[in-house]
Length: 321
Picture 1 (cartoon, one colour):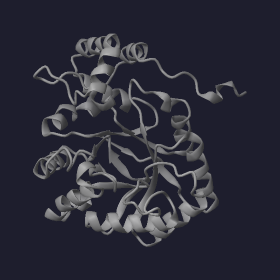
Picture 2 (cartoon, one colour):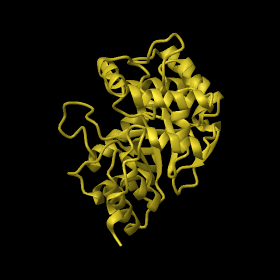
Picture 3 (cartoon, one colour):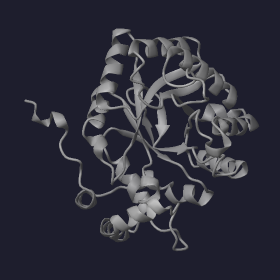
Picture 4 (cartoon, one colour):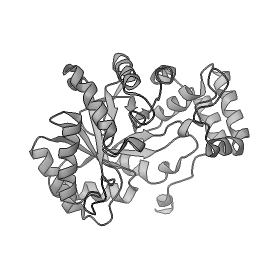
């Protein structure tokens, strides 16, 4: 495993981050624990969750499951960088959601209780809340930091302008500000390159990528010839992009690497990317992509990938001079 600094912070995280959204609703507790054990053994020190994760089992389920794994061996807590999120509705209560100072404080306390820990390493705003003044958000985050309940603050699914505004407000308060942004980014979906990635690079915000394999579309066929999570939407997307995926698989065959590994390796070659979140539902899925950080893609391969999956184009500010 390889490690990178999380944005401009001195914190080092593994280039692969273990996402836990499947834990509970899709992956059983024993299987989730086995994946966590294998990931840590492989050198993954970055674990991402969210207070809302739980699906049909209810919000908070995944944090609770993760807390049970941490409780089995207290040494595990010190070995991982633990990240969770706040914003999504946790009940029908009108104030039990969003990024008000009140909800941030209450949600953090609830996450700490479910996780069974005394602090969260990276506390992320799951989505932008356009009703919450940035001053109110930083007031709440500063209080949590002062209380020792969180260490770093990150954003998720923020536009470039909001990342810039958040950090400018933090600088005005004499604070570190955002150290990370968690965003959707993969070979097919490259709009992040327009404004978000440039903003993150300018402000020293590390990018954590979610859905790096496009929900399985870039993972390739399973060993048994089937496909991962073959929903109707996935089947339609696979059919629509058949020629593109065929060209991608041809590149993977030429360099003797499986598609999922190539897709992850490509992300780790992109400037500004700190870590890619892998969300295995089974142990074999985890093991199939662990080698991605060691894969070096030659410039000629990166050029071929750009031809198959064209960049989104120059950033909107490219006209400025």
